[in-house]
Image (cartoon, rainbow, N blue to C red):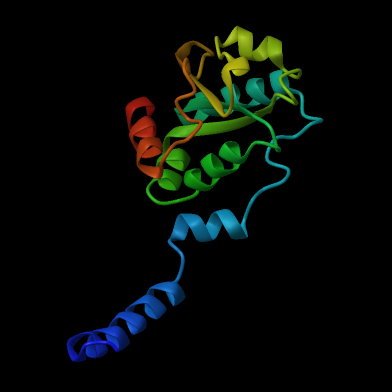
Length: 163
């Protein structure tokens, strides 16, 4: 038998748990479920040509370039892309950066490009580099900083490296 005080608590607790279970998912979780981009990293793109185009655009728009090394198979790469599209990150990216996604295959594509920008893709992806509009390296990831990241960490990164 349940004591009388607990009898009145159980319906309230049950209602609270039901409300929590039916609550909408947080925005990031909902987007992860709803919008993974299976073609985020083009397997046929020419990374060097994409970077050259981004640099030309960055010079004319007074922006910096973010090189985002990853693969379509990479869950953390998908999450990072979702964080790029959330506010305030989307606005920071649009105003200050040109973003170039570079496919690394299974650590066997564009290895020379990663090496050129001192990005150790063998330690894991996503891996980022920031270059100025003239191609000068400003930042390269060292220790898988973006493997398990948060929207707030991306915001801080974008603010730190904005043009």
